[in-house]
Amino acid sequence: MFPGRASSRPCGPPAPRTRGGGPPSWACPGAQRFGYLARERDLVAHIAEQLNAPRAELPEKIAGLLDRIKAVDREDARLKQQATTIRAAALVGGVIDVNGVQVVTATTADGGGPWLPPSATAFPVGAPGAVGIGTAAGVVVVALNKAAHGAGLNAASLVKQLLGGRGGGSPEPARGGRLAADRLADTLAELPRVIGGH
Image (cartoon, rainbow, N blue to C red; front, side, top):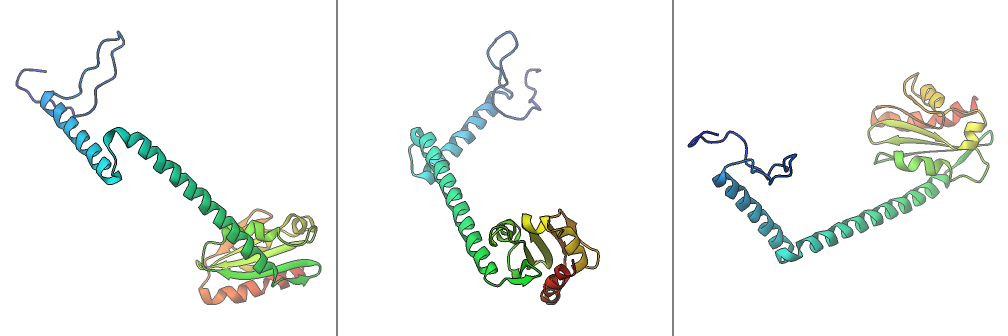
């Protein structure tokens, strides 16, 4: 760098040590370097103020906050699983029998996807079961348990029959649609008939 000429490099932390092991060199001239340190100091002071802790205790304080966040995430997952079990039980309470296949349909205000597979396996052991869900987004989702799949049913095929050839997925869970809200109930009502035709 020529004397009196400002550096075009941005202010930042020191560059790594050289291959020969020499001391690190700063990526900005002295005045900019101190400006960078001042901003860093102010940031640490702001964090300490927000956490109501001395600077020396910040690492421990932040570690404690991260542990609490993880605990909240675990509790959230537990509550969601509990809600899944309750929803599954409610669905199975409205089951109808179609040629030995337990069929239930419902609509939901949320995405529905994460709790469909448990619902489809909540039928009596060994009983073929099928769940049809209409979501708030107008999507029809069909999930089968392994017994229903083993009996020759295919979720992707069922969805396509319900939606006139649209949709798809795997043999056990499948989806399709983007239907208008006023068409969901009628479409889901066709699921027992479609399953009965197999």
